[in-house]
Structure formats: structure tokens, C-alpha cells
Length: 277
Image (cartoon, rainbow, N blue to C red; front, side, top):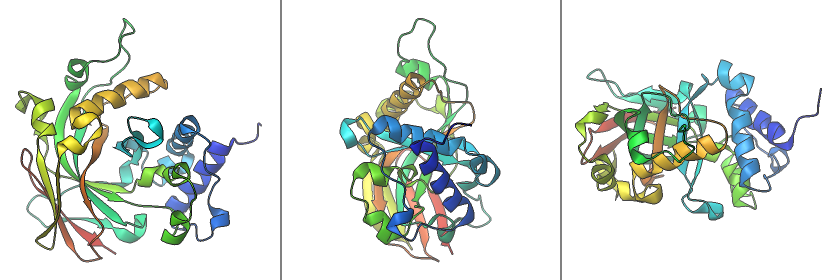
């Protein structure tokens, strides 16, 4: 049996820490930074196919986009795991995300897309167009991303390179997603969602605001098209049932356990959550 690659070793460390809650408390425990973006994506792939990712984290549930412009890239993206994708309650209390289970340190208002059909490569070899991608979108969902980490704040903050920080699944944690709006409800989704104004509230007080224009390439639909094509370039693809959160529109670290957090959107329903212990 061949020896594990550096990407596989890093993925093993991160996934085991996440699955067991045994966080990385020493700089010596933290994996060596990937040397480039190609190896970064190899680490993410090794995480999403790790046996514990399926048995303990619920398996691959979709992707998050972030780090716009980092490392000379349009953006970066990393896997989301099903165990931490939580549908917001409807009428019987707010959804909860356990801060301790993901070491939650940041929340973001994001626009999500639920994929309704596999998005494989075009038969003519051309890149997928906006029309190709949008026809495969089942619905748009308002989201609160709950960013997490597998190391303590001190160890994560001590990483000397951006790639070293990004290697921890691009700070993936969990997502609270709200009421789905069918994709056919939008006559010009790219424009409407790019101009969608957003805000975050903590215990009823607004703490941040933004818009869909903050997403990679200027909007959620544009970001999704880029992701679909980038995955194909790696021999992967978006699949039916996956959730894609298309990038931060606004964020806040001003919360604690017990706080009520809401994200509002001018073109989508509101979504609410409570920060659990």
C-alpha cells in the first residue's frame, strides 16, 4: 500500500479533529500548509472522501465559496457536510447550530442554491453557460453560514501562510438555510440576486449589511457558473441535491452562545437561528 500523500495526511488530521471534537491545540499538530492551490484542492477532496466524513459528518452535502481573489484565483471553494446543513424551523422555534461542535467564530449572510440536476460537462467541450447552469438550479435559499475551525483560535491564527489557514476546509462549519424560493420564480436571477440587499441581526440589532454583489464575479449566479465549470475542470461536478452557498454578503463575529441571529434579504425570505452551546 502506498504511503499517504501530504494532502491525505492533512485531510486525515482535519477530519478526525472535526469528527471527534479533539481540536488541534498545538502548532505542531497542525498540518503543513499546501504549497499551492492545486494541492489545497487535493486536501479538500481527500477530506470529502474520507471514511469519517461519510460516517460522522454525513457525507458531502455541497460546497461553500469564499476567499475572493486569494492566491490569484477568482475565489476558492470547499466541501460542506450534510450533518451541519440545518433547515430553519417553520413556526416551531428557531433552528440551532452548536457552537461547540464546529468551534463557530463567524456568521455570514449568504445566498444558497439547491441543485436539481447533475451538471456534467457539455458534449461540445465548451464551458457551461449561465443558461446551462440555471436550468439545473431547483431553488434559491436564504442562508446563514456558521464558520468553524478544527484548531484553537491561537493555533489557527499562528499559521504563517494563507494557504495554511485555507487548508482547514476554508473555515467550513455549518449552514442554516431557510425557505426555498423556486428558481422559476426569478425572471432575471443573475441581476436580481446580485442586487439583493442583505443584513445580519443579533438579538434584533443590525450588526452588518451588504448585497449579493459581494459574491465572486459580482453575484451568486455568476459565482455558481464559475464553480460548476471549475469542478468539471477537476473531473468532478455539481450533483442533484447539493447545496452551494455562493459567498459572503456580510459577516459578524459579534455573537455568543444563546444569541438569536437573523439574516434578511430583499429578494428572499428571512432566516433565523440560535447559537447553541
